[in-house]
Amino acid sequence: MAVELTDGAVELTDGAIVRAAREATITGKSQDLHDAACPGLVIRVTPRGVNTFRCSFPGQRGKVVRLSLGPYPKVKISEARAMVGALRARIGGDGAIRIDDPRTRAPAARSDEAEPETLRALIDHFGERASGRHVSWKIQRRTMEYVFQSHLDRPLADLAVSDLQLSADAHRAEFAGALAVRCLRPMLKWASAPSRGFASSELAELHAPAVMRRGSRILSEVELGLLLPELRASRHPHAAAMMFMLLTMGRSHQTAMARWREVDLRGGFWMVPDEVDGEPHAVPLTRQAVELLRSLLPGDSQGYPKGDPNPHDLIFAASPGTKLPDWRYQTRVLQEASGTADWTCHDLRRTSAALLREIGVDDYVIADALNHISVHSRQVANRYKGYYVPPVAHALQLLADKLEQIEKGAEEFAGVDQRRWAGVSIGSTAGERR
Image 1: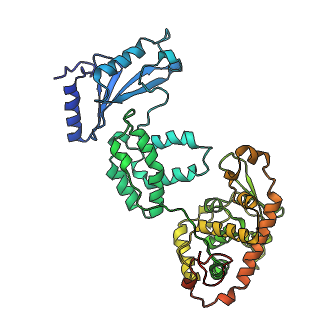
Image 2: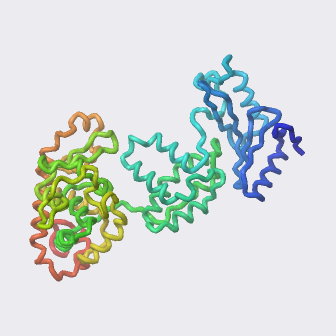
Image 3: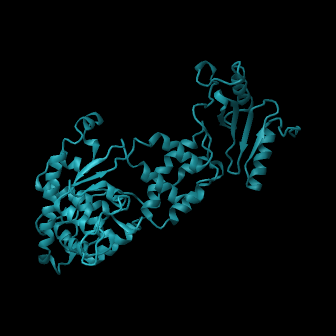
């Protein structure tokens, strides 16, 4: 039996670790065993069977350097002690171990980054790498934190895959749960790698509650003829936002967060904050888009605009200062009202791009209108930033005129059974399928 010392440390043996692991399983609580034979060495024993050697040393400028030495029993007690001894032998005269000097690094010891101990810390760890490089990171992070909010501050070592799976499966938005799982799973695989042992390997077996398929839905001119009058007639802010998305080819989250300070109604521009390099993306506003925005200005009893709106207010809001909620529900409401089906907000953006392609607009102009920088290198994108603004403005005006033409001719589609036209591509003849 391990000898208990006055400072709370014990002499680590295989038997002591096994007994501690059994106790952790019974009590459901993790515990740290400090090695009396090697000061600075500790093994964390968890109820999930993840047992990891760690050590800590005073670092430079008063910081504490925490190292993960590997999982037990893959790393033996004698090997863990040797790693700590090698590090201690190289402590400088100031009492701090210099981890930035390759000659002072112990084999297999990880000293390059702090160990993420909770789910939130793990997401933060990856966020430091992704932020500023991936335009979708903010959405991914927000989705993960929303779906797994009840587990964010729990220790990784105490998490079970069933906990995360139940949260993903029970989430009311099926595809939000699927996106959260798809984004979190690589992080869990990284944390549960044998060389790290931050979490149980079973966490990497998390499954998405729904299959996420690449979208390809494009609304036909018949469907647009049925939908556009409903978007125009509805007084719900979601309908106006969707109409604005069709006219500008904007993303749903950017449209939902658009503020009056970002639009210049006289100059005809919407300056969309860029989530990659911080520079705004200039979206030319067509005559129809400006008219739509003017119709949303606060008005007097006669309907005439009264003064300028608060520049910090959201343009499309359920109530002042409140972001639009539940796009999926309002999308279904508009589908039922228009007799259309099986489309999402992003499909509106794709439909506008398909309309421009049918009109004959160059793909590079369409890509710039969509703010897709992947069609050319970052260097080219920076050098020619704004080069496509005039052709984009012309293309968006062609798009707005086309949508207006479809809306004005909507009466010829009145009474048409939309199900007969489901899947008909834009510009195709009757009966042709995509």
